[in-house]
Length: 158
Image 1 (cartoon, rainbow, N blue to C red):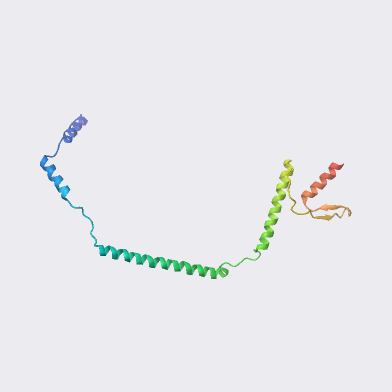
Image 2 (image 1 turned 180 degrees about the horizontal axis):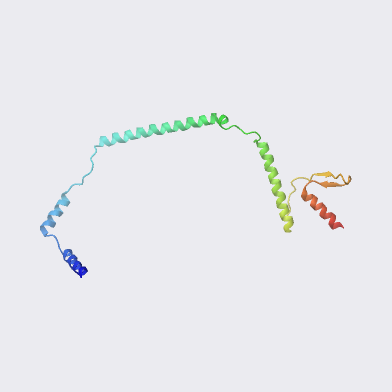
């Protein structure tokens, strides 16, 4: 019941309209009202923008010269701040990289050998061999892979 009463009162309030005099007066007041803006004279705007421009220019120049000066100091004191470590030079790095590459090539060769694939690979170096103390006339391979291959060849030849 209360809801129906409330709905009826809202419909009555919705139908209320202002009288024509009030509507005319309100419309005239709104239309005659001037737009209010903050008035800053033209010379004030120019002075403000010039001061900001000069402050920005000085700040930018200061930052540029600080970066330039600090960059030069870091470059000058690089050897003092970051001393070079012994053993780290181009030749040792190249030697170590070659060793790692040869080890990777060996591992890839083993994988291809055991998977049964025959892929032509370039030999990295000629195999190093040394004479065997048991048999002075034979040559014994140095690497484990070559030793295993030699033993397998012996077993197959029986």
